[in-house]
Length: 222
Figure 1 (cartoon, rainbow, N blue to C red):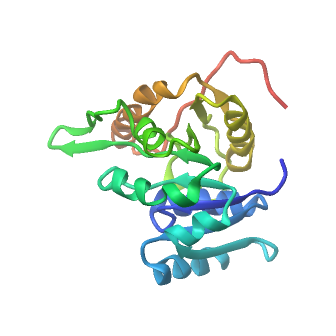
Figure 2: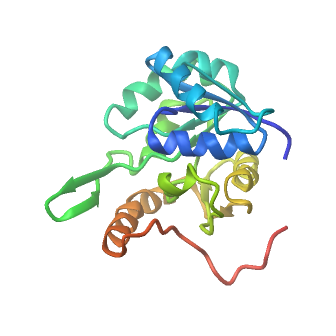
């Protein structure tokens, strides 16, 4: 696909850094967003050392990162999610917004999915950003393997109500895993995708692994 400028909000966290590394390695312009501009720039500098010389990665405040980008990727904790997303409304109008946010809780029994009033974090983002096309994707990729050069065997399940935006994200997934994402239905199915991450965490703890989701039986897509 053509080069995209992508703002990663939450880009200084493990998931954000991992996705930034893969996307920048694939030739996209990546802007890490953070409330703390210096922290974002420092994270970008750390990643730049490992990236190809031609890679383009920088750090900025959340608002400035979104202003510069064509696509916005939300990789933030669910705690404080709605307040942060609402603060971006004026600068994200007309842009594709990808949510990989997983509302999870942890107790003595392990991880579990949180009840979200709107159904899912992705649907919350869509309600808060009516002028943007919100797509759910990249929920089940391990931050540990994203930041390496290992081959990713996982599939990226993509949900959304805007078909054109969903197609963009399906193709963008190729820049992360080497394969296009899989169209997995309407945005409301994020209600199932997000808490599924709790199951993966439990599996990975039990097997000391970094496993993901792989869909079988589909005709290969080039």
